[in-house]
Length: 542
Image 1 (cartoon, one colour):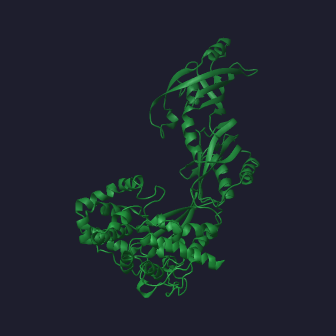
Image 2 (cartoon, rainbow, N blue to C red; image 1 turned 45 degrees about the vertical axis):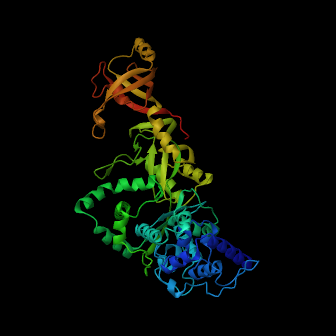
């Protein structure tokens, strides 16, 4: 079995080598310190060869020699008798690739900080290190997405080798056919190299997924050298303005495909370096940089991390206490109220999903002294870097813990895991929703039958409301148009000055001020004693 796999790998490599330009070109690149995977990606080789353990300089030289009819032959069954050792790089390859700085050679030194005598260049050891990082974080995964960040000096190296090849080989026919088209980025070549072994190791597939494996490469020496070179062409004016333009330039890189929109640059200095490189004309670049670039003795370091994109659990909450705020409310280090919906719901979700933190989002809000009844108010809990993939049982456990609390402050219903689109739907629907209320009201004169008729006859009444005095500290002083859809009065037996006012309004209506006129500047005088939200009509998936 192992022999068959080795034979298959040799056949795949031989086919890849035969798709390359004339052998003297690859020999030239090898002598210039370019690694095999970088040679393959420069000439558009795709697929299986990148993950082959045979992909070393000595092996490529052998295949190139075969191609050039210098030595050896391939037998009918694909077996080759190598005259060179393939387990280690030869002496000329002891330094790291002049383009990728060793990223595509997978040296242990890159992520372990030391060179081992055995398996120094091993994808398997590299994959094992990634799997170990995931295990340490204790993540449950159903797939993964590879997120890669590389230092800007890689871009300079790629341009340097391109200009070198252009100067030396532009008259040869293969140059336009093989070198100017279908080149593969370093990030894509890295993904081609490790995706299949990583899928086998983790037993899940790579693709669009909320779980991200982040590979952040850094090479301080090379980056510092690049920055020193770029300073030679920077005027003081450009140095001042580049900081202002960094964010805009990074966005343009995302839009034109130079970097993946889901990946971020390591720092503003990296973005500034890329911007400066992008603006250099070829003749200035050739004056600053060596053609071809030098091999390096230090591959830098790799930081491996993993995290899950925000996860959302949504539903509707009911609030039964007039001493519980919607979100945590602290004034001058003193808590207002006894608890908050945010904390009651969020802490249980945080515990079950083993997340780093949470944020609470709701479709509107009620004051601390207002109960939320009826069908409840739509809400989302946004969980950051959840280690657990919550099942229906886990979500039910969250609901049970909240609903079985002795204090019975809050209850949740329709709890479920939802996609990030629910957040946008909730925000859009928030402005369009209707809300129903029940208010206990006292008026300064006895309630008349005529009052009931007048109130019930008012449908879709437009009102104008100024920002209430009580919220001026956090809201702009504006005048807002709102709709009162309907109202009706429910008498209270034994009283002609107390009644329940039921009403349905447009979202954003200030009910307390609508009833008492803000500081009581109405006639007859009315006071709202208690207020409940009895329904939030909103077409959302929660």
